[in-house]
Amino acid sequence: MEIINPYFIRYTELPEYEEFYENVMSKNIVCSFPSELTQKWPCRKDWVTDSGSINFEYLDKNYGNLTCPVYKCNESYYNSNPVSDMTLSEYIKYWKEIIKLEHRYIENDLEILYLK
Image (cartoon, rainbow, N blue to C red; front, side, top):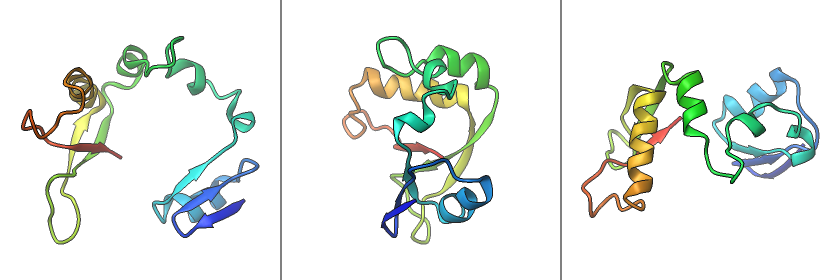
């Protein structure tokens, strides 16, 4: 494990769950793994199309009914963003619309949502 800064860790080997939880998840920081460590993970094949884009159909079919926390980034409430719940299907619909509109949130008067 290499601590790049207080907000980013680079792993050189897969950590045990407890270590990952303590160092990354509980602190809500970014981490990365070299591709060799993740090459056998099914999500590397299933979640991405052959052309390298997000496989929305796979995600929607397999996880669309799951409820996810979504942060409203263009709103603030006591120095944080309000959160609401959406199904992954609802978020995918939003995400596809954002892509179609070329990420022009302001011009299209759209909320900026962050799937956590």
